[in-house]
Image (cartoon, rainbow, N blue to C red; front, side, top):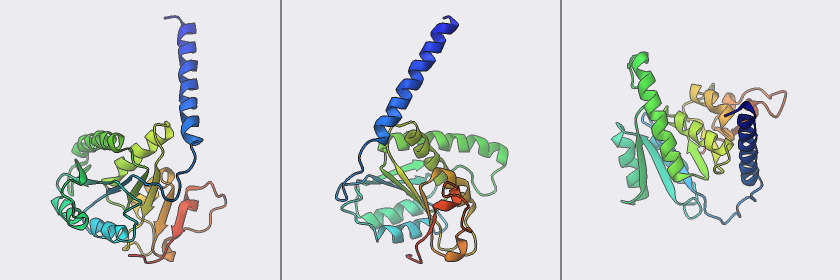
Length: 214
């Protein structure tokens, strides 16, 4: 094809993309009584326990249906969330862990890519209206997948990161890394809140102190 044809194809593609984003952005906010599809990411090392404590304060009638993402080699988290929900047919999506403790970095590249692909499939299937995470490494590709789909205008999803109760003095690496991609970072300790940013558009402006709710 000629360069002129490619140019007009590119223009049409950009127009369609912008229209798609506009359609999603102008959709009205859901009523306070509307149901919200909630997705949560589980993790070992206490992350699942803290997530369950958060979910105890959630209106289950409103935040439904609920789906969960866990590492394939983390049966303990799956068992805990099944016990909490009490539902045999609840949705728990298993993905490959991006990197195991002690795993060489050159092999972690392949497992990380596989984890990303699985996360993209899971997010696309569920299309959550809200993603709730609290720090396990498994949440990183899930957050990025939600952010990409939202940015491209496929669906709306609010992404909330709740910092671990153990983070007393500073934000975790996951929180700092994902801050540009989430809507809100909620922290349980005032000492972890960064100094006031000079501009509201800066990522650190997303950090909100909510107190020791856990």
